[in-house]
Amino acid sequence: MVEKKKNKLSKREALRICRDLWQWLYRHPMRLKCDWPQWEELRVKYPILTVEDCPMCAWVEQQYGREASCTSNKERKAASKAKRDERVDRCPMVSFWPTGCNTGGSPFDEWCNERDKAKNAKLIYQAAERILLKEMKK
Image (cartoon, rainbow, N blue to C red; front, side):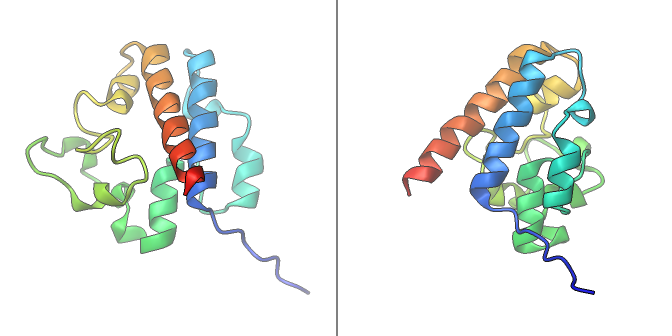
């Protein structure tokens, strides 16, 4: 039996997935991340992706290990704005949320807390699109 090779998630692909997910959430503001129809297909192609996770966090984990990912911090939601988590620097979207996606007031935090979900989803997908375009020029 031949073992199927698992695909590595590239930075560009992680950004594309992030953009597409958040664009869908912008168009469907009453839905949750886990409702996105593409998850099933993408998890087969990239097993490192989970519904609860972010494509950016998955890419960081794949590149640097679980401890390097923001998702490894169980108390990430309680992180202080004043204390910067070095793991944030590895996120391809660090320019969009320099103190981290889970810090109070970030578009992701606002979306999670049911505050203007469409507006915040749009901000995230547009940021992913801008960063992806920059990445493609390299």
